[in-house]
Image (cartoon, rainbow, N blue to C red; front, side):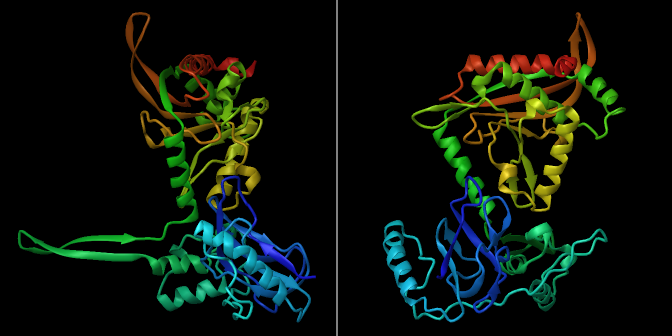
Length: 415
């Protein structure tokens, strides 16, 4: 019996996916485990896997088309199997929903409409350690025809592979300019370009608006003397098997402070508040397409070396578009660190369903007063953004006080 392939939910925040590229076309034989298509979600470009063997009988979605979760993508069955009745049933079930939600149906309006057979890449270049550019044959052909240097293109496919969509996005960039003449110079121009909004950027925009609009934010800022920690980190890295960053230490300190103040490790669920017993720290990371928040699971149970290793692995996966749903789901508290970019302090927007996010600034050498004398010292500012529906001011302040003590006396992190 023919099987309907529907758009799966590939992340906890996903509401729709975009078919980045079809890797199978109508008439192709498919085995269980074969990759049918590449799907752009709000987090990454992921592979759509076939769970049944058979022949592709129908493809109802074009490349670049957005499809809601559970929307029909394709049908797999026996060769020459009659699927007209199935298409009619899908049409009847899809049309009312599309009309009520103003969503374009994922299948054609008539079972007799010609099925789509998009031009597809046939294979990929093998990944290796030689620096060779990963690019699908179709994308390579398109790039050559349009005069693009593939070595300058950022791929969004698996392992950073350049795919058809990446070349199309280059073509979709709209540029414009306006010439001006000032002081006899006629070479001055205003110029700009517009580019398509990615699924990731759309989701970032939607979630931040929802968070800022729904959650009543308040902010608490504290200054931390980092002198002892700066020296301690230098000593640690003489013996650690992996380089430990200040951010790794902050993750550990936050996890320990949360154990003392579990109220900040909570989520607003409408009629209930969920107080998490486990501690999963989301670490905000900037990538070219936007912002990702992979999660360090059970951070309170990990050593500094384990945290450092995991964060480095997650960072590499994030920049190579290799993150999987298990890497970004389940955050109970979030840290956003812009200190490495020289930002002194900032406020961050709460990342739902978590109720708190810690914004970490740079460690700066500034004059401080110690025992009545002005001396140079290392100071870091951290701002806690809280959802006031869950966390009260006194709770947030107590958490920050404990965090400050842990960072100023880092030996306590080892107890």
